[in-house]
Image (cartoon, rainbow, N blue to C red):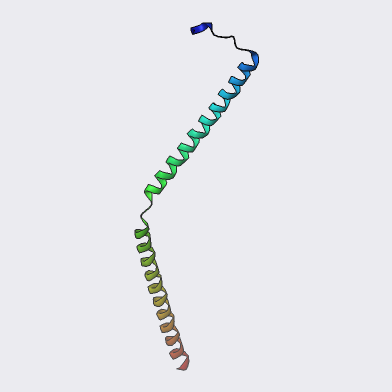
Length: 88
C-alpha cells in the first residue's frame, strides 16, 4: 500500500492534531511527576530511619529533663541562699 493510501480529510488532520497535543501534554505531566518523585526519594534517602529518630527523641527528652532538674536545683539553692541572707 505505502504512500498510496486514502487521502486525509481536514477533520482527520484536526483529530490527529488534537490527539498529538494530548499526548504531548501527557508526556509533560509524566515528566514532571517523575521529577517530583525523584526529588521525594532523594529527600527521603537523607533522613535517618524511624529507629534512629526514636533514639534521638529519647535522648532529647532525657537531656531536657536533666536541664530542667538542673535549673530547678539552681533556683532552689539561690532561693535558699537568698532566704538565709534575708534572715540575717
